[in-house]
Amino acid sequence: MKSHQGVLVIVLLFFAGMMLLSCGLLSFVIGKVTTQPWLQPTPHVNSGQSATLAPLVLPNASSTAVMASATPTVSASPTATPLPSPTPTSTSTPTSTSPATPTPTPTLTITPMASPTATPVPSPDAIVVANSLNVREGPGNEYPLVTRLTKGEELFLLGQFKNCSWVKVVNRRQTVTGWIPGGNKYVRLLAGCDALPFGTFRPFTGVVKPNSRSGGYGRLLVDNGTASDAAVILTLDELPVMAVYIRSGEAYTMKGIRDGTYRLYFSTGSEWNGKQFTSNPSYKRFEDAFTFRTTSKTYTEWSATLHPVAGGTASVEEVDPDEFPEIEE
Image 1 (tube, rainbow, N blue to C red):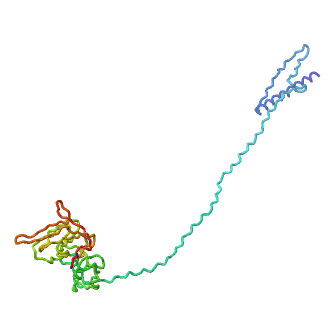
Image 2 (cartoon, one colour; image 1 turned 90 degrees about the vertical axis):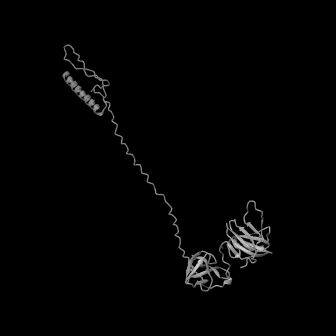
Image 3 (spheres, rainbow, N blue to C red; image 1 turned 60 degrees about the vertical axis):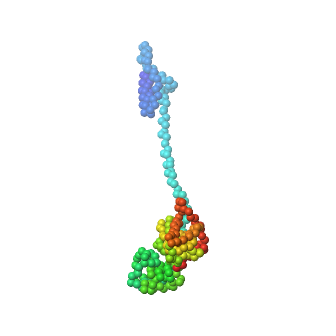
């Protein structure tokens, strides 16, 4: 009976050891080892009796089968990591744009154009009849030559001198202006001379009205130092006796003056028409009279300047244009 109990004890111890070993392997596999203290079996020898192995005393062990109670390590079930929810890509929603207001296309308004009126070609006032005709700067052959016209050229009249003995003309192309003789053998006038104004020109320094009382011995030197041309008129008893034209910067001597007491008038300006200046005219006279006397041995000679000079002894005064003496042709 005792031998059977001993065998049973050995078997139990074997299984208990196997269980413990498996628990230890299990604990190793799981990753957590629970260490339990071991009590080494101590053999008790009783005299006269067979050695008996005492049962292994384990803390908290049951009387039937003693095995270490392995505390199972609960392996945490793998927590399912939630996949991140796909972040929706923000797609810009197209803003509703109001359709552009269409720009109205301008309507082409066709304005009816008036038919161009043909500019009437003016009829000429004169036609050259000479084969070649000289055009000059003034009314006289002594004036410089400007150009020559040919037969058949059409002209327009600008003025006249001495009853159309000379006429001032311009050609149709407006390229030539000057004076030509007004006789029938030179030009055929298609306009009346009476309707033409006096033409303007610049005379040379000299006589424009000859001395109506010539035969004397008296002399009068007139110096024009002004910036303009001048017309100088010598009068006796308020009537013109003699007149001369003196260009700016020039002088002229009036001769053949008979005895008497005279007054001296002068006008300055430009655009002379044979009688007066038509541009920027001025009218003056000397305050003092000029007396001329002749004896068997002497005669009188005066000199006058139209411009102020140092040491001058004469004075001038303004004259109303209506009181200024006229020059007859």
